[in-house]
Amino acid sequence: DAGVIQSPRHEVTEMGQEVTLRCKPISGHNSLFWYRQTMMRGLELLIYFNNNVPIDDSGMPEDRFSAKMPNASFSTLKIQPSEPRDSAVYFCASSFGQVNQPQHFGDGTRLSIL
Amino acid sequence: GENVEQHPSTLSVQEGDSAVIKCTYSDSASNYFPWYKQELGKRPQLIIDIRSNVGEKKDQRIAVTLNKTAKHFSLHITETQPEDSAVYFCAATPANEKLTFGTGTRLTIIP
Image (cartoon, rainbow over all chains, first blue to last red; front, top):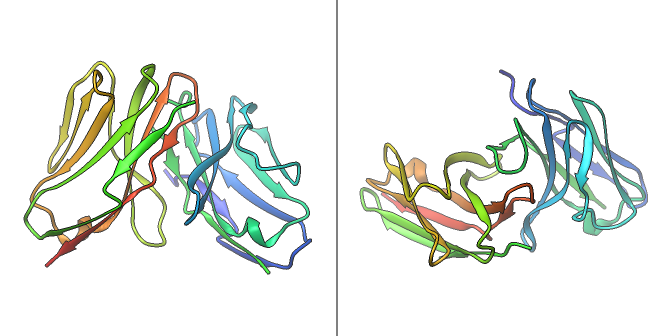
């Protein structure tokens, strides 16, 4: 099992640019979660999908953030336009079942907005 | 929504001693309590979890206890080793609501 796969591992871009983060969940898992981790705010849930449907997007900071899950094996998190305060590590996680099941994290994308 | 508090924020113990990290939660409907270990620059990894119908669970040197009445749960690590040094996060969730994480405990094992 390859685990949750995220790309890119690192992203450095200038303010105002569009950023797209990608995630491939573990095969067979039907829930997918996007988290953001910063020193100030810790680990916070942005959005989660169950069976490709967004269930809770209350953690998405603002309209600049959007997420999609077009099929069971792929999801994207997009930031447009990006701002320096979006700099963080973004983790994708997946589980079989819903929120109260073990979640397996990917290696994360370290995003730096200059 | 759920609120999880975690203490202490930092903890140093001598190698071979035990370490205890405590968390409290606010929502009495919470029924799932995982613990994650995160090494520097790495992803959070699930190390143990417990459900509300169980009071204690052990896995080798790691144990978790749950007190539903007091709404707190604890992670116990015995015979600590240098590789136990990491940040540990607790979390809680009521059914079908988002997982809420504690603020983390940085555990340092002193050789």
